[in-house]
Amino acid sequence: MKIKISSLLLSLLIIASCSKKIVKKESVKFNKQIDKYISSLMNADEIPGLAIGVIQNGKIIHKKNYGLANLVHKVPVTDSTLFRVYSTSKIVTSIAIFQLIEDRKLSLDDSISKYIDNLPKLWENIKIEHLLTHSSGLPDYKKFDKKLSDQLLISEMANEPLHFEKGYRHEYNQTNFWFLKLIIEKVANQKFEDFIKENQFNEDSHQVFYASNSLVAIPNRVSKYQFNKEYNAYEISTFNAGSRSIAGNGLNINLNTLLKWNSKLDQNYFINQETKIKMLTPYDFNNQDTSFGYSWGIFGPQGKQYYGFSGGGVSALMKFLDKDLTIIILSNGFKNRPVISNTITYISGLSDTTLVRKDRMLNEDVRLAFMLNNYNDALQIYKQKKLENKKVSFERALNEIGYYYLSNNQLNNAISIFRLLTEEHSNSSNAFDSLAEAYFIKKQYGLAKQNYKKSLVLNPENDNAEKMLAEIEKLN
Image (cartoon, rainbow, N blue to C red):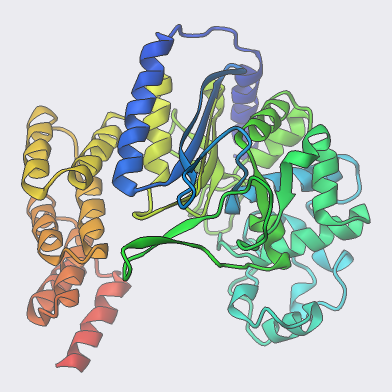
């Protein structure tokens, strides 16, 4: 099975590297379509600033800065604007590990105890491959006191049992990338960020900065804005993830530098083709429930799959290998958390007609319609789209809109949307669970109980419904 997957990846990468057949686009029309979508997205999710890059067949087909880097001083996003990409940092760290593998300085099969001293006995046989694929079973250090020394922190973590046997399943965990940072520093005999700059950003190192602290003053870096609903205003994030987090979420970079980095990756400048195939190959988890490479997520349906990562709701780098298409999104915050997968799907469909996922794009249109119009007008837009597209399910959009209203304390609209959702998707356990949640928040516990029970009938394994029914019994 692994051989088949690797062969497929080889074919995709060869197409991505060698294909010269370009479907000619009306470039002005294409860029206007993206601009129109981005404008609606920024208005709906209230995103202050954004930078977008789209690359196909080695050429930049769309690159543009939108909105403001600084709200107080009205400073626009420019080519110099540095964005913190949060967890998108992980794919850069993954490449660093594979560079060391190519140099025969370490192996995926190496036990982490070879590079990290004084580990608990039960952790010693966890391998580097388990860190990269989030299949280590390690406790997440973020739940512990970050002021502890590394050794004391590990001792505290050791009191918590492993979550599962190594390699069993995927469980996203920041400890994995803290340990990868330690391993890189041990093997390279230099600071993590210095190794990354030297081996991936050499001539652009002045355009790259590592910091997981939102308050560090870095020239041209934008702050992440989060919305304070109590004051109905943005505030600057003060979150400091600490130095242990930099391999997992500390990269700060501008769009131009990331575009150059992507070009080098595509040209096998960092690692060779065979190594790249290995990095992107789905890991063989024991429970087979997840499709995930060596720190590269794998998304989308067969034939329209894409590889990459997103971070903090504000960044993403995704690659459609068989179309030699890469989409980069960098932003500095939001009021309503955007759905990154919706944005990637929408832009990919505009970029290449063979990647159009009509159902997902229509669902995104409906989501934006409700966020940009009053409820009754949006409802009419939805009904018209539903009438024109009878085979399309709008369950995704209705659920997202229901939670949008819920998060903005518009409980009556939320309940109306969730009721519509249950009427149109009467076999969906999730629909009734969402409606029950809205009733629970409105303290209509009888109706909440009724709908949680319906959800449980449709899906007896719905643990949330069971938990909430028990909570309702306590309240009664």
